[in-house]
Image (tube, rainbow, N blue to C red):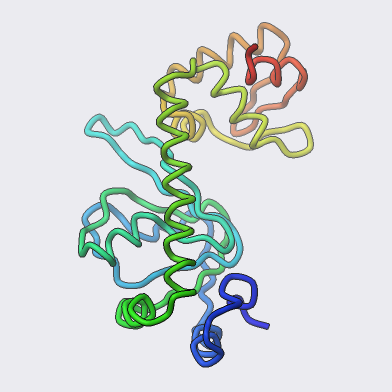
Length: 214
C-alpha cells in the first residue's frame, strides 16, 4: 500500500494509484527546500523525517514558524499554489527526509475535482495554521523561561537535547543571547548542564514545573 492508503483512503482508486506512482525523493538533512521569493512549483507531502519552516527578520533573527512532519504539508506551499504568491519564509530538512512532490498542474486538477484531496489539503493547512497561532500566543503571552523549558523537554532524547542555542532561539522566538543567559541561569539552579550542541537535562521534574507554571 502506498502513502495515500492512510492519508487519502477515500480518494478515487485511479487517482490514488497515480499519486502512489510518483517518485519519492530522499532529501539530506540541512537541504534547503525553498527560500523567500521562490515560487511554489509543486505540492510536497513529507513521508518521513521533518522539515522546519523559518521566517527571517530584517535583523537576521529567525523564528521557527512550524514543522512539517510525516503525512503533513506546508502552509507556505499551499498559499503559493492557491494564491500564486511567492514564498515569504525558508524551509530546511531538519532530518533526513523522504518527500513526494505533486506537480502544480496535477495539484490544481485534484483540488478542482477530488473532494477527498481538498479535505486533505485544507485539513493539513488548518493544522499548520493552528501551530502558528499557538506560536504567536506563546511568544506574546508566555515568558521566555517556560518557553525554553518546554522546548528542551520536547527535544529531549535519553536525557539530552541535541540542539544549538541558535536553534533554540528560533524555536521559541527570541534572541540567541537571551537563550544563552537563561540556560546559564538554569544551569546554576541545577536544572541542566550545557555543552556544545547539546544540553543534558538534570532535573526533569523541575523543568516540567518551569514549563507549566501554576
